Length: 136
Image 1 (cartoon, helix red, strand yellow):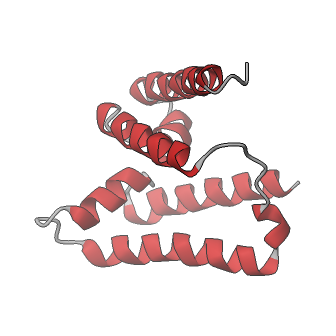
Image 2 (spheres, helix red, strand yellow):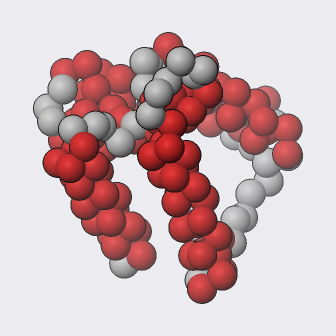
C-alpha cells in the first residue's frame, strides 16, 4: 500500500509541476540547472532538491522500517551503479522521472523509447553484476 501511495504522490506532484509551471519534473534537468552557471532560475531548483532530501529525512524519522535494505552489494557497487545512471541520464537526455513519469504520461515516443532503454539496461546491468559476483 505504501508503494501505491508513493506513486500517487509522485503523479500528483508531477502533474502540479506541469500545470503550475509548465515544466517537466525531471530531476536530472533540475539538478543540471543548479550546476549550470548560466541558469538564471536556480532558487526554485534548489528548493525543489532540498524538498526531496528533507522529505526523505522526514519519512526516515516517522517510518524508519521503510528504509530497511537487504542487499549483498558492496559500497563500490553503489558508486558504479550511480556512475552508470549518470551516464545513462546524459545519453538519454533525461532521467526516469522526466521520461518515465512525465514523458510516458504525455505519450511522448522519445520518452517511451528512453524508459524502455533504461529498464532494459538496468536488467542487463543487474544480470552482469550478479554473474560477476557468482550469484547467478
